[in-house]
Image (cartoon, rainbow, N blue to C red; front, top):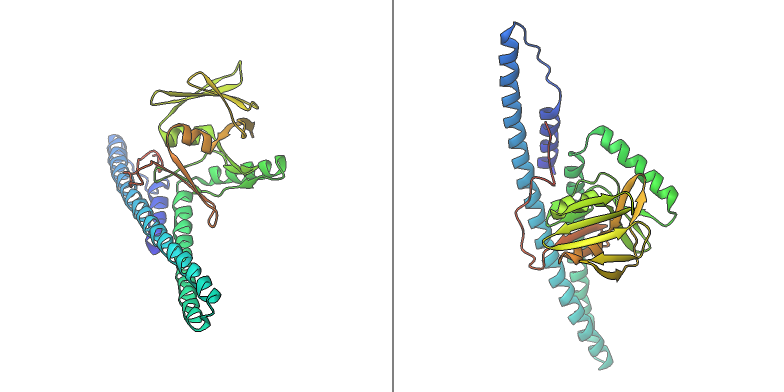
Length: 287
């Protein structure tokens, strides 16, 4: 956590306006160029550190998830044995087994606490990539969405991970009717897809790797390479932004969507579970 705080402070310092004023004709231009070069180098170093730190978080998350899965399997097996022992009247051995089950419960709670810590660090890492104005706009948009849809659940910053990249959203993603709706720009950039808006038909076309998805606002019918399909989460205009169903888009492009209900985090991954090299587009610090 200390490393994350240090990185965020560095980001703030690097991106803050220059405090030194240079004087003297051509000296001003030369000094400005030198200052810009130094600033560019600092930004590149910070980007590299953020990228490495984000990769480390993903590695930790993967390890914790694997350990949690192992413990859960062990617990299920022991619970089955426990019931068999009770049925057989072997209460002494059953009680001994129950103690082991309780220990596994404790270990799983510890892993859950570690996962929450990682998600908190992801949130702080993501927040450092937003300006104060962007954060204010995000919060205002979240408030509008909550008023528009009584059943909407707003997802926090850092809640959407695509191929191990923390996605920067230009508007809040939210869950409505059990389906996650996300700004089209965020998912297309995260997936490396292209998007075209057709104002006449009020539809968007998302394309990637020979797959083309056409969604019309408010319609439950979509076209995938010209073939009609029905969806239960419609594309819509919310707060002047185009929103599309996250799971349908991701899975149409052959990706797996994993929902962590404990931490309200959505991980979209390749089928191979391999940690991909993080891209600079997901965490971008502009000069």
